[in-house]
Length: 309
Image (cartoon, rainbow, N blue to C red):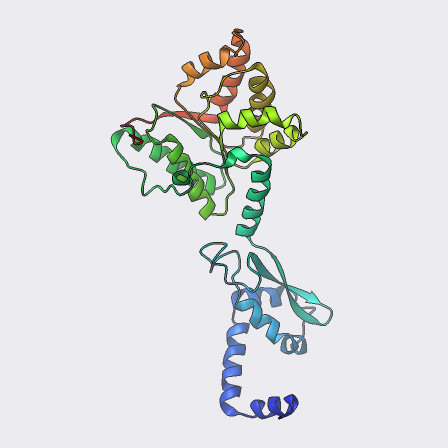
């Protein structure tokens, strides 16, 4: 068997091999990211380091950065799925290290939150919702337009208010939340949809396993929070004042976008929150919650036929 050194020497002397190598080398060194890195470290890098590190530079150029070449985390093309390359100086050479890509960071965060809040799980049709399938009849056009405006403003670096989508059963309020969440995900922006009645039931059971505060903190700090079907829950003073209150207060102070869906308008929801399961009337506490909801969201009526029938 031919020794490896002899094989390499023979290949190096081959004219077509040399041409391919020089072409590949040129393409690597013309890569904008490579040029930017070499310019940034021009006082630390010499020609011999570049020559010695050519295989690493080639490896870097063939990987996807910031998920640009990948349609999803599952279809990641990189050597390490969910990790993208970064050039670093290592002693007398250039090396490649791999760090979590934006989609991997989002997926890990979602898994962490799902472990905390099981009520994150929503019906499949909501998870797969798109604006293309959000039928634009007259009763839903305004909601669709305002959702699109929110997305444009948020992407532009602003902190717009969320939407308070209210209307009858089955008109597409929750579906629109899913469409917004999926548009945000395409831009690597994290959001969380929570079904409120299930959330509040779970919060009560969380007292026993000491995870209550951790769950509340996760909801407080989520970049974009979507509270689905608020008003469908049975009101208790504790869930209203010790769970919803602190979450909404923090998000209001931090200007964190928050969405709501409800079968009630603002006035009807305030009436619902006024009376607890025990029949107590607590108008000031209900008004305090509504003040936060009004501060966080713009009311939008969603109308039309019941699409669940």
